[in-house]
Length: 341
Image 1 (tube, rainbow, N blue to C red):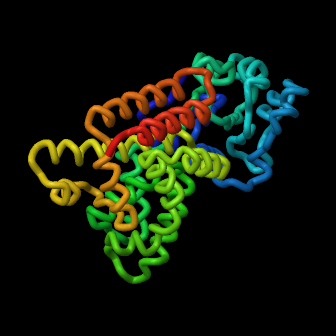
Image 2 (cartoon, rainbow, N blue to C red):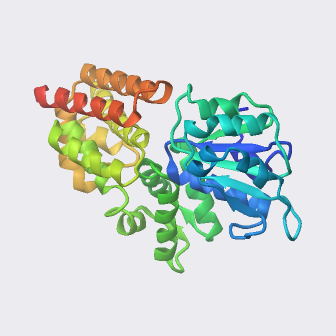
């Protein structure tokens, strides 16, 4: 089966009838978070050697029977055991599918993987089995990220102003683990102050969390293809999800489109800019204005179509997502370079 729309409830109380769960997707931080949450939910912690066993994928490929042996082993102190396989690929799909169809023992098998296409043998093995489940981990949407921000700050006794929340929501979210690290840093920064303002966010996170991504976003809008390729490569090599980069660029294009639309409705440029939430970061205001003047509404509509097409191709085909999205960003940069002010 495939778990969709109820991940939090599933993580808090996984179905005891399931023998195996696959956690996969482009958001590596969210994969780790959910992997650890399920381990704790079943084994009570992350480091109990009597209730947790790890198998390397290559070991399972060479000895498929080992999975059943580990799953059938009894815990020294009682309680359900967890058998974990990290970084699995289609090379171990047959072994895991065979186990899911006829599980032995009482252990829960947890498997992690990178982003998998709909035709992946490993993914299909979990989605088609009644005793197994596949849990996808995609980059946070605006709604889910806002929930993560509020939840993290509330746990620390903090509230957040609307403009600060909007700023964070617009810039975090490429990797759940990295987002939490930035929020933990913000909690420490706040000290005894209980309300997070936009100034607090800019002072604590503004120069670290988003600047690399903002450099890429504005390079696309400026038509700077060389910078797009250089920064995109750096971000993806550092673990930033290519889908989350695409989402951030799409948000920027939407903001340009909103600004042009308000100007078409009669507002002057400054008035249109003041209507944006979150407001344009002061370091990039000059470049944003330049892009508003460069990109016409028809060009922006064309850009959004191209980005949507790239998103669908990256999510629903076997083509490498990184390459699909990089090509789309380069195409946008070329459009911007050829656009007349």
